[in-house]
Image (cartoon, rainbow, N blue to C red; front, side, top):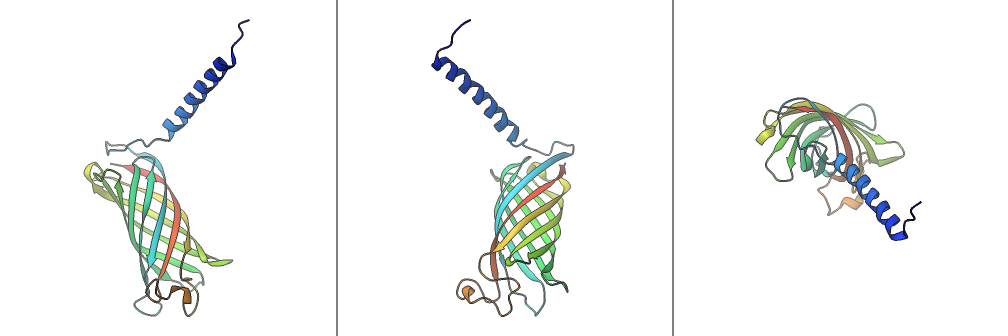
Length: 198
């Protein structure tokens, strides 16, 4: 029986580990979808910030803008920008999200992906600063090789208001001088799961 020295055993072990981690890393790399036809399934995640403007009329919709970073298994690293309206309902803590417009831009800036979105926001009954969000997203095209892209996905996530409480009557004194009266700011993390084709 051949006896291996400690350095040889460690060398073999490290080599195997490198192969395993290399395979894991490679499997997690983006597939670089370039709009070459065929439906492809994807997973995505994002971290965003938002500003929720005050309603122009009492009880009216509140517009908000969303910006952040977005990682898509087909497109790789991207930036994310969106606008949407938050609409109060008769159910306390339950809001509709309407007129959503998404713009996703690849890291190199050569391709964009656009989408429309509708959804809901439900505040956490234990903490009004927290809420769950859900969207139905429809891809409507883009630019570069994604100009004809289309598909759909579901978005699920979590938001936390970092200044004013969305549902607190009379506003929050902590907002004074930070955001316009009646406005909110916050952070969100969310996941997408869907299909894209061109």
